[in-house]
Amino acid sequence: MSSAHHRHLAVLALASAVAALAACSPSGPSSGAAGAGRSQDVTLSVWSWRTEDVAAYTAIFAVYEKEHPGTKIDFTSFKNTEYNLILTTGLAGSKGPDVAQVRSYGQLQPTIASKSLLPLDGVVDLSSWDANVVKSAKGKDDGKLYAVPLAQQTLQMFYNKDIFAENGLTPPTTWAEFMTANETLKNHGVTPIAVGAKDSWTLPIVHQVLAAPRFGGSVFEKAVATGQKTFNDPDWVASVDVVNALKPYLPESAVGVAYTDAQILFTSGKAAMFPGGSFELGFFEKQNPGLKMGVFEVPAPQGSPSTAPTTTGYADGAFGVSAKSDAQDASKELVKWMATKEFGQLVADKVKQLSAVPGVSYSDPLLKQMADNYAKNPTPYLLLVDFRYGTPSGTDLLGTGVQEMLLGKKDASAISTDLQTGVSQWFKPTP
Image (cartoon, rainbow, N blue to C red; front, side, top):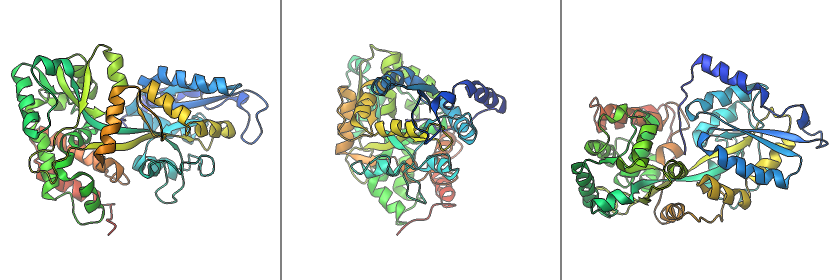
């Protein structure tokens, strides 16, 4: 994630990208028209925003090709910050994909509303899946299923085991221990927490990792969803202020540090910790195979409604069939396979992500720990799961708000008021 969340694409860059795709999307004349049978070979174009996973998906789709003679998969990935606009343009014309990786929850709704995807009810059976995961791929208005969820992401703190050992530290189990660790690392010339605040989409994730227990986690989610509480609640305001209190332990001038710069700070050993998602694991391991990583749940900050730590979880990404694909039967076959345990296990083993498919096992010890932590102490990624169904979205509001806080322009109370005012334009509590 999961996932990235912005749409910054210049007109010339978009035109160039779309023109360059004409040769590979969607399925060409060899595909056969939808409903016309499979009398000849088919090449399915699959689009994704995961440029870092090209090798993994190539290997995964090779398994499918071997099991489905005559079907070839043309996997194409795009820069994550440009993908939304590229996909929207592609699905609206004749040069889009057959199967597209799509966003989840509220970010999926515009794609559904444009009638760009085929409903998959009756094509795949997700009745045994986690309800919150399935919700991520459904239309909010019609309740139909439009994609097969790919992954479950968790949010937690990564840490460098060697740096911790060199400084006599172990994963903290209390907030006091966490603050002591930050101070010790800073005093020894190590950036304690790598955060790329230049990319505002990362900051709601940072807030969840550092402060979900402070606002009350899933208990607060239920209260705000039913109108019992708002984002002006003192516990929520205090949770935002936690991020500000940790500013001395972030990279210097953090708002000028990009997300990719923060990743490099961590993988190069210049920063000891990285608050991020399970989706980071595969990239971190590729960047520095020798990096000895661990993960831990940040202890509950002082004043939290509950002293228990939490691991945040959400569904991230899904694959749907383009309504304009001229190989719809073959495309449906592919997404049906994506709902199988075989595909889920390949995602776990090769993409190094937590699969959305039930019953998948994890050989990677960190993935297993993340899955186990979430099973024990689950909480939703509140602003993504519940507050991305309208404009302005909760994540956008908090992301830009925290940037302003780190720059000294606003305090936690003002940011929380802006958040409440913004989402109130479209969010209506359900008592």
